[in-house]
Length: 276
Image (cartoon, rainbow, N blue to C red; front, side, top):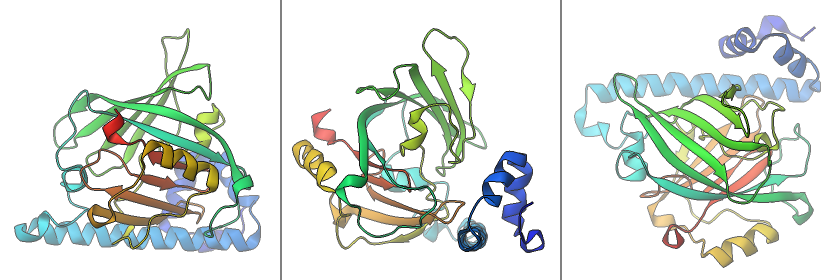
């Protein structure tokens, strides 16, 4: 049985309701200290969501502030410079990290923690307009990580909230949906790579002072690719996932995707756009 059920936050209760017994079992297996960290992370996330909602209410009544708010409906235009178009595409290098799921590690990574890497191609294939606009992106492998997968489809809102994630296997016409919000399934090794839309809507944003420290293997690949984000045109986001594990994002304005994403299980960098 999960400990301290009386101390659940509303956000935690929502997750338990949505994901049921398997999710409860995962929480129950966590050491007590990490379990408390997860509760604290849920509290912080709930607080940020409340702050976002208050900011959106304020901005809706103050048009002069609407453009500068990264949490407004103009979030995509603030970062990309325009709205997505069908056919927009970009490539992402991603690496798996070889360490435990549980430790809340925010220090630089050792070289031996970097696992297998791959190159993934993203393409905007559909736009849904209306009150709740959505972007549908197809992800394929340029360097095979899982030869069974033909493509991964992700759907997200204009505020970078991922709402759908569907795997398509070779030889099958029917896709297999998985949880869209970052809780990993075991359907494919893809799940260990930071390919999802990062949750920046409720992240803490700041101006970056230095580039993220990359392990040697990743740094060499980045140098060969000409990877060098312009910090003067970038925003830094810090977020916790549901288990209190850090998620870091560097996004250079004018690019369709973050220059850098680090989760507990992987690191991804945007391929040099001039090489596409």
